[in-house]
Length: 435
Image: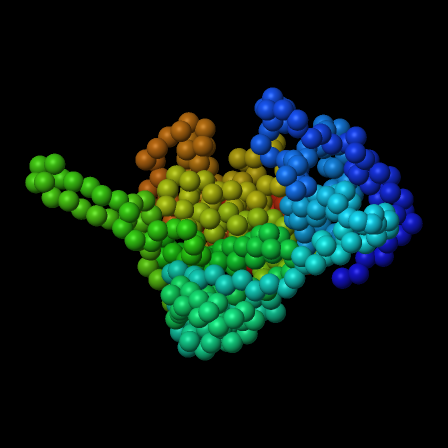
């Protein structure tokens, strides 16, 4: 990546660089009391001398960092990369002999930052998913595969370090990933930015899989018995709680908190269905776009809330999150007469998906239940039936809105206008397929 250094960039750099490299811009503590006011963390250190910026210099550094951030681009670099590079360049300006020109420092600073931008591959294991009858899911930037001995060998052979480190990599991959279903994603940026990008993509894809689970088995009443999740590297998956029956003096060890979830088996025919009928590729394409229309953005938001709701162990939180998934699709930012619009909208939207329509009264009671949980702090109100029902509604609304993209809809306002027309045309029995 090359950056064209324009006269305007040079001018702005020179103006700021003069302030940041002046001797009078910094303090060197001379007594113990100075450390009390300046703190234990110097901006940089030259041999045994600790150097602290004055208050106005700190402000100037922040301003300069924002300027450099815009020059290099915000997609690939974290603030820590920018600040660390600026600090090192300022230190270099004080220590280098002979002194370098401003133009040299500008080019060197940009080179230092740009050197942190790399293509990186991240591997995460997935719990609760099994693939049967096909090799995996393959996209341009990510894939879901079984991490076999062959994959471990490929990673080990391409390692550029010495044999000791190669052996360590092989041991680590074997212990943590061998024969597990894994998510592999390639992203670009400095390490911190790349990690955030990779994590965001992984979470989105896992949430789409949870959505597909809801579409597939929400009618069974056992949709929340299945769980797909990313492995957290610092999570203890073993027994982590202890209990004693004080009467019998018998002890029990168990996993505290999360309930047991069954594995979801994704067969080849199911995968073909989620691609052909449930818009899998369309959803994954949306997440890779740089700019989204209103409906696309609301779909991504809804998937995030629905996926989180499906994996949530607390039924009250899960119930509310399913409602937020619906609201993300249907209510936009309008607050006026929210309950009335939801009562009108949900049955008509679901009529495009299923013949089993909720009545406006049923929707009203379900929303009232949501409000009791949120605003009244009511506990133990949500039954499994309540949870399964709102899960089905959220899933159906999301499915319909995804299909509406293919019909040319680009905003929630368009959907709301069409629903108002349908509601006025037939208040009591909306006709399936009219949207």
